Length: 479
Image 1 (tube, rainbow, N blue to C red):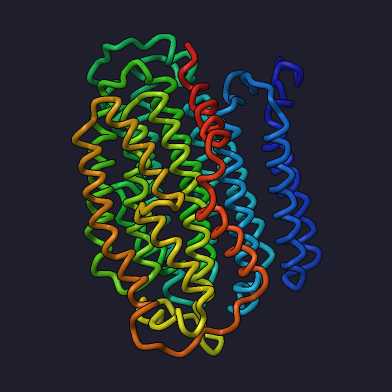
Image 2 (cartoon, rainbow, N blue to C red):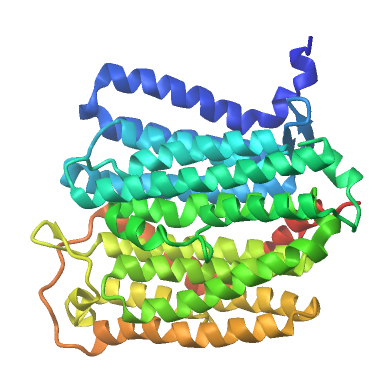
């Protein structure tokens, strides 16, 4: 019988703390009811902050739970980003939930449980623990997508997400079963030591299905079909949560799976990643042009951004993974800030989501207009904003790896996508003013100030931040 000492529980302190906090807050929430939703929400944020602190202060590395869980620098970096994004999303949801009549204590708890699933999947060291963490996250996300049961759009978003999510889980499990069948193991460490550059057809098919299941979770083409409808239908703070935290966790998992156990098979899986990366960049650039709803535009923007991030993974190199982490860190800040502005789009207490509703915003509320303009310029990759450096690093890594065509397509897609980003700016600064939005609450104002500061002056962090991403990436390439 395995003892608790053998399990190395200390390596999973953030996850254990989040699990205990979730259960305690669930009991408290049931006792206090929905009237104390704000208390539960702030307690959930506090739990996430503590988990971040535990991850940052713990420098130990190794495996736990008999090899099912791995703690390392890569995992800590990705957890800080995804859990931090989750905390910001909960804060952003407070006022919205109370205004829209969805102030249920289950909302922050489900986001907390989803964060636990993210942390577990980031540290997965086995195909079984990968699936458990992924489903813990996904089941919570299905519910929060449909949390507004009295609206057709929210219910439809939850149903579409659930049905297509179940399909992707089936593909992932089928791929995992093929990998197990042709290798005899599901453990990443065993797979990494036993696989060489040559792989049989059965194993390659298994990797393809595994990649397909994970591509759905990051909304990469051709598994992106759920994204626009779910982003539009889900409540706006939930959409912000979807676009930032789970996407970071899924990208980190994608990277760990391919670079870790299948690192020697880069020649086989690289073709898959190049295809979904290029297809995502192109679709994200073209499909968003005709969008009139700001949330659907952000959905296609997120598909394109995932494509840019996957360029780093497609290289299969340490520099590429470092560029991927840099890009995702910047993407999270841009996304949270953009959705904070979208949350502020309210007239007479009613939310508005059309791009035309932003007309003349620079004259009625210049602070909001300049904030959104900064986020749009950054997403377009225009210097000196942080988004430029994110794209610069992934494209440089692609060129160093000999993927010149991919880098060129990425640059061209970025130029095309700049059209719809700049169109938003044109509407705000040059169109005839529409009616002013309601006053922005202090919580949203604080989030906006913080994200604008990071996007505008983030490049000043320079070497220390890039050293952090390089150190995190190097963990996956240790022989």
